[in-house]
Image (cartoon, rainbow, N blue to C red; front, side, top):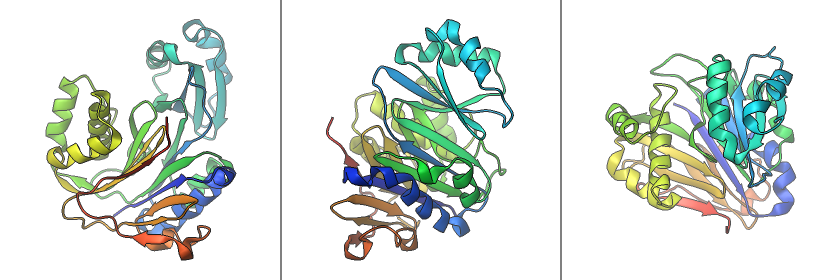
Length: 299
């Protein structure tokens, strides 16, 4: 049992409040996942730059990255540290070289995501503590997704925390379990994808990234996953331009959505949505099984 939330803002005037709204939703889901928590925020970005979300030691001197990666990043990269995570901003064309340099020079650092706009933060601990540690309440942006984890089949580690990201500006949070993840993982590795954990949710993220790399839209990738991913699941997926929701054909995992002219929100339970502005007059519904829902801004 885990808790997942998602928030997509239609009203630009709400963008300064994205973090505080998402933090409230996340913390309400604590009893569905007290082991660890994480979230992805889609904020401002430069199309010529990529932000790498890095997991570093709490006492790591990030100023080292500015000097020691300058040779592969085309100059001194920008770094911003938030507790155990660091955002490293580099030219988009230098991502592969910088990733290789990080793997070779800093084996203790994990790249948890990359994107023009996406920033990922996740850690072991109660959701309120994780949100506070990374100062989620003061983050701004257009949309975000979050997850509270209750480990049932693996250890409580930061590696097992969600979101999982396997493509630029793409990430996924998941409530449930996949029964055929080992076979799908083998297929995706054959297609050139790499994985950093044994978690089945990372396989789901990889599958959707693979489909979108082949030209599928988010909605098309979600629809195709119904044929290829077996198990019980609810997915919330973030992309640079929006987010999507999918429940499996049985739809045994709880899910509820609310939409107003200002936002679209998702929660594992309605109580995750009750503090959102105007929710009392929102359209509220339970997503249908086997039905992709997605909201994206115009390119």
